[in-house]
Length: 394
Image (tube, rainbow, N blue to C red; front, side):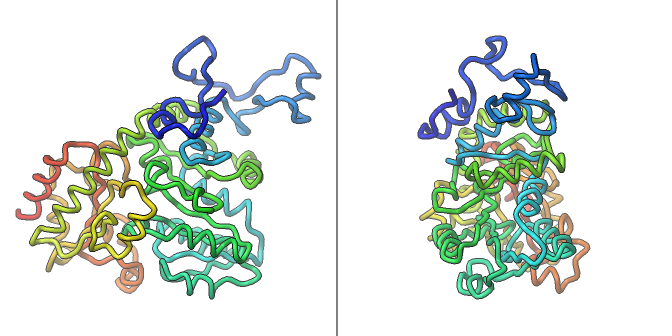
């Protein structure tokens, strides 16, 4: 039977959701390269169709590798169930499409991943769903935006790239008081640093491409929550086909084995590098919830075990070209999107993600020209600090 969820994060990362005895007596789960699964008899098929047998039928509806990964992710997030998708965007799209109908409304805290915002504001609107955005952390504004058509409250915590931490207890309580479901995108926190479901949140979303996979070599997403609430999400995934290959699921399961160890180093590196940047004369401001100067530091200390490896900072008195020269001068971190892998990555949000936005839009989204975002990997902090220092002084 799968391991009990009360075990530590490291134990759950290695053993959680896995059966002790596996096909072929292997230690690792075998990769099931099957698109369809056979039945010995009509009676066996009827047992499956009528819900008496828990097994696979067709690859779009499930795979043994997928089941093992879902059980492990659910255990890590203290959830009853988890549904894995091909990407993080596939996960949020699958959840919202399974829960919303024409005329429904959702309320977003406005510091959010730009593609999540784009899907809701641009594409859900084509189906008659209204998206309302309110300032992140302003619960009075969020409550004022709720009406009898509101079906879901959505936020990231921490947010990307400002690293704002949301009071999850207040967020969940607001949803419950209005009988509205709640969703937290906890990609930047991971289940190691925060478990939103324990605060009463209904759904937690992760881009498993990031810290959960951990090696910049796969794409995946997951929604965790109660089994009953996730049943329509799983059913719609089977129709839409937003699944992963068995090989990809194997990579995710293998990456999760070292999850706790990696997160300990990400947390350590993030804190040390944020403190270094906060004291550097060429840095105007650092966005990192582990710093006492961060606006939501107190909330982060109350709700999070650690603060992750993502840092955003502003280069003092720099225009976008001068900021780009700092990025170019860094030698260890590679210029690339994404985050959460063992390799450090660095980018200038103005160019990487918001280049096609107008200056007015970037101002509204809080993306100044002199902002740099760095995802600290698991390299030695001393080497990353030396490299960053040299780049800032070049």
